[in-house]
Image (tube, rainbow, N blue to C red; front, side):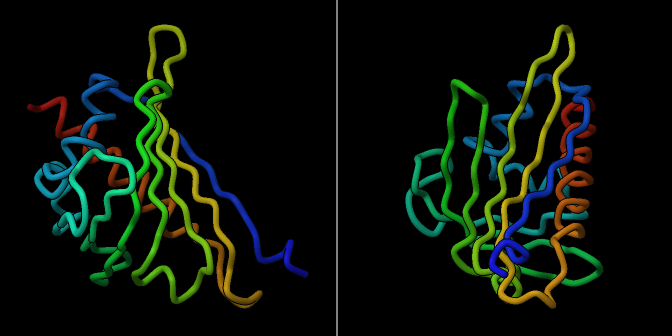
Length: 152
């Protein structure tokens, strides 16, 4: 029965902006995200640590499905593999999921670069939906950031 509660969602899109700049927008420069994706991200505050040190804790305030929600995460950044992992430790998603981990990986393929989002989750019960709305939000927010970086 527990296997029905555990899942993984993945999606990616091609970046038009500089891959390194996009990657750092979610790590060391995450404080800029409310400016880069202002319709999706209202505020990000550091609660422990800083913007780029592993184990740092941030509180996100964002809009999804027309509602303001919060997400408190523990950060892990792998510069070499261009991977950022955000493990939920509190927030609205924890009303539905026992475990909730978002991974962003910036991948180069030939002359192109891609942003790949993965959500690993465990539902609190079988009646909870898969977090497809959160994956859609991540993709739209990522595309907003990508577009803002091109304009900058």
